[in-house]
Image (cartoon, rainbow, N blue to C red; front, side):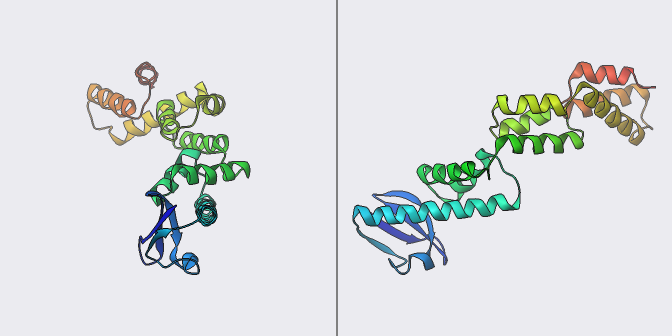
Length: 202
């Protein structure tokens, strides 16, 4: 098997096996085995040793990433992809973290939904965020239904509408309604719900 090692920067080296980039490793970690710049044939056992080193390094990077804050499985895969790891190494690291419960999309969805509910976001905006993070609908739907009730939606609309009216009270009434509608629509609220909230204003 052909091994090619090339410096990515002063600390990291890119590892290629048979012209496929498998990922990165610290130059210091490689120094006892290979120089920072290297090209040559290696045995299957030597390749297996390098692949295991790549798996362990990717896993350690991912754990450090998850220590900072909760991330979805999709975010974790993207993180390692941006680092330069190949799909096999990425999947191995993600699976190890899933097995240890370091990655949990249900937990991530609950935290994300709670955060956006507290920020008075619309259901449509919350669903868009969940979709962007590739959270399966069977995971987020029951959580959203539990945390984002009809009462919560109406309360959010009323609060946002009152704040908007207070901040723009100098506008003519019809212009104020028109602009308030546009403001809430852009936030993702349903047009019928917005009209009803405006009509119910005292």
